Length: 285
Image 1: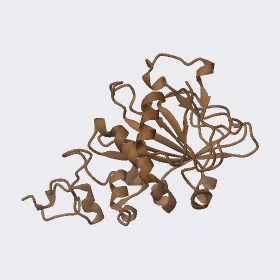
Image 2: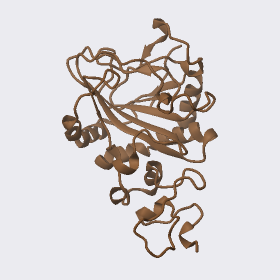
Image 3: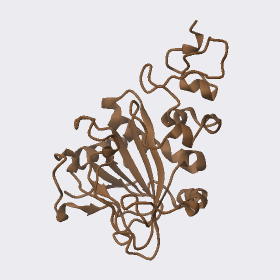
Image 4: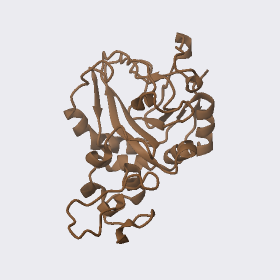
């Protein structure tokens, strides 16, 4: 099965149709060069300070840099990109009333880095979730060109419907080659891996992933982006970070510094100084 590439005019339904068929799709040239360059300018000081991975899976010649909602204003805009977020919400909606931001991470694969082990990202939750439940939708934004030579992501289109024990044949594996500013969508159930970088320059991608609102996030957003930073963000982004209840009664908290006894059950939005759309716990006796 081939990996489809859609044009920049692609809409949510186009992405969903391709994901249903193959479990992965590229949308070309979502960002202009100016936006990509601005993002790179904001994050590269943090990437430069990041150490290489400590094992073969994370990549001993690969840098993975997180906390990007706190570190990059441009990244905050990309997280709530209308087409991307719309696709994530529609894709995950059958299994949840709310979605959340699962991970923000740049992945910089350096020259001579070998290929990563093939895997499914849903392994983050082990084998506890039924196969019929899709827990996440992932995106990799090309912040440099993604080529066969520099480690463009490998994937196996159609493998989202395979039994977990099925192994791909070499001819079933394709690479998500794409121009800078393009976005690769793939489900949590698709087999994929980072490619080997045989070029003489690093390959930089931005991994933004979304998951069901009732699951634990891969990146702890409350520590990566605490209330004193998140309080000034757009409310939609605040909720994606997890400053809302995932479902009824999932995610409330108690203020440990309140000594009045009147605020033992609070919605997460309270920590940001705003009210919740959920039942108002602040007025409970």
